[in-house]
Length: 485
Ligand SMILES: Cc1cc2nc3c(=O)[nH]c(=O)nc-3n(C[C@H](O)[C@H](O)[C@H](O)COP(=O)(O)OP(=O)(O)OC[C@H]3O[C@@H](n4cnc5c(N)ncnc54)[C@H](O)[C@@H]3O)c2cc1C
Image 1 (cartoon, helix red, strand yellow):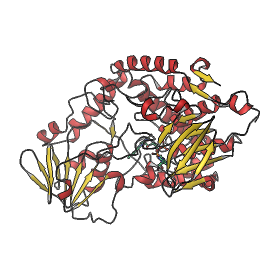
Image 2 (tube, rainbow, N blue to C red; image 1 turned 30 degrees about the horizontal axis):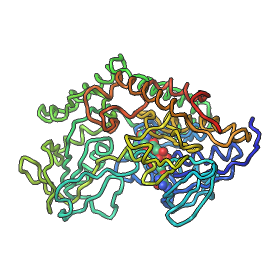
Image 3 (tube, protein in one colour; image 1 turned 90 degrees about the horizontal axis):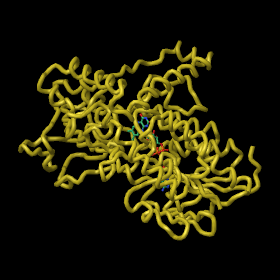
Image 4 (cartoon, protein in one colour; image 1 turned 45 degrees about the vertical axis):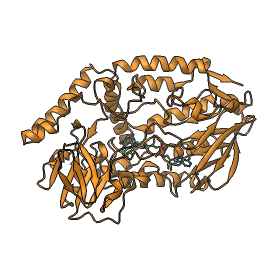
């Protein structure tokens, strides 16, 4: 138990999964003096922004939900994006946190002045808080490649996370650039609607087969009647995903070999045409890039109206995309499933820490944070799902929940009035980073592929140890790694 020696005021930036979680947990802890700043007009983050056909989570829904808000209502093992968005809206509403959210107001600067954070928003609103929680997301700022001629395109063109629902898809000639999870989900969802579908592939991807059965009404009723059954299901799913999460950090592990075999079997057994099969065969180890999970992508790409385009893109023209082999692929709709700027984090917001150091200076080389949470020199400023944290085919909800628990422990001396400031030390950051960079050498991410996990040096910007180790690190901060004032 902590004595509330001093009432702390908080700003939470972002009302996606992590911001909602923070507001609920602060409220539960009796720390009710907070404002959530959200630049959009609704909660949900990723699940509000992405509305493309076929969007789903590739972590089972009973795992991709808050530990404190299980629900018996998920329709499928891997539920669709709109259902996930509805879940976040409902949880936010049921925990009565929406009243504390300032919608439509983007935080543009945070400055640490005389022991407190001075916040400024795009609307000119100002706030002074003791603690900032940056829950601004990772897959948030669209990455738009700079193709020659894009301005000439006469059809409809948009990024996958900015879907234009006014554009007619039925019977249209649709082009999708990219082969990540988004492009794969979209291909399966659009192939039966598009007149013609062209998937522009720069890099082939391993596809993990997965069934996506619906939960029957009886099963849902059973979950409702027996919450312990629901809890058991979650435990089983956690154990299953732990196997994967622990294996990716050891490229030679038997589990990695098993995953590689499952992906290879999927390709061999389900793609009939040998030429297409070879075009779809990656030349790197499975899970080197984020593993794609799909029950039906190979079926989709083999439909007669679908084409896998492997020629490199030369330019975009008025009527379509021209590849370097000189072919023009005529299109009505061009979707950029080209991912996100994964090193932006809370930027373009400016952050100025103690002694006037800016985030631009602290991150001049690349983004970094101790345990992906605390940046030396930026006291009482914490990130959820910040740089170099765990990423992969598991639930980022659990990551954020564990990180939030860790932050609450860091704040105990501030709550009791024993200290006013806490931040990771520069030495702790340096040591942590050196150990991290050494540990990534064993991971599957360095086995010969290019992926969004890699930083500008080609070093994975990820948590390189097992997920079990992450859980254990999050149990209690190392006192020596933090400086209190
Ligand atoms: C297509 C897609 C599929 C995914 N599938 C999975 C999956 O299967 N499993 C998984 O674990 N994860 C998945 N993810 C990752 C997903 O992003 C996270 O699981 C989770 O939703 C992140 O939540 P968040 O709150 O950290 O960030 P976000 O959901 O990105 O929310 C950040 C919020 O902060 C707001 N914001 C940002 N900057 C400011 C500012 N300066 N001022 C005010 N507001 C601001 C944004 O508007 C946004 O609402 C997927 C992501 C994408 C894009």
